[in-house]
View 1 (cartoon, rainbow, N blue to C red):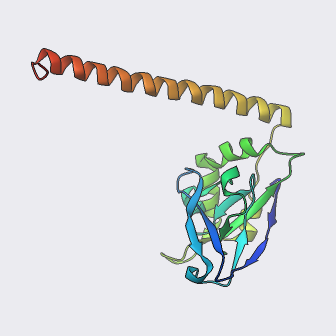
View 2 (cartoon, helix red, strand yellow; view 1 turned 180 degrees about the vertical axis):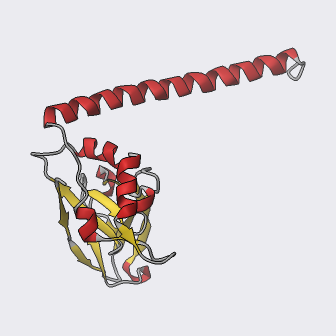
Amino acid sequence: MSLEEVQDPVEIRPDETYKQVTVRLFHNGVIPRGEQPGAAIRTTRQWRVKEGQVLLSRIDARNGAIGLVPPQLDGGIVTNDFWAFEVHLAEADPRFLDFYFGTREFVEACQRASEGTTNRVRLQPDRFLRIEISLPPLPEQRRIVTRIEELSAKIEEARELRERAIEEATTSLMSEAGVFH
């Protein structure tokens, strides 16, 4: 899969403050969960994550809770319900993998790799690591990432134009209706 699991244990000290990290559902990013003093954290050991690592929630990978650790969360900590992976950069562009992680195909593979009862469904490590990803050559991955980013920028620009048009139309209609004097 071009990923290698990493574990960087952190012994939680009551007198230190820790930056906690989580992953949003539906491929909506790796985000801060908050900062806590060690005394408020209920476990004595957690795991450090680093910028550029792939982070996934064992509980919610089946709901798209996977993404790349952004620079501002470098050094943050997660519980053992999260897995961190280094990307083999000679084989995969992390941004390409991140886009792939947002696909229905990948989320369905995570659903098939999860098992358990209703509130205890968890991704199974052996099944997850057997998920195959067909990776094009690195130059093609980079070309695809560039194209996706270009299209995303155009989509965002179109959204902004639409919002502005709605605001202008609303203002115009209200003015015509005599709402503004």
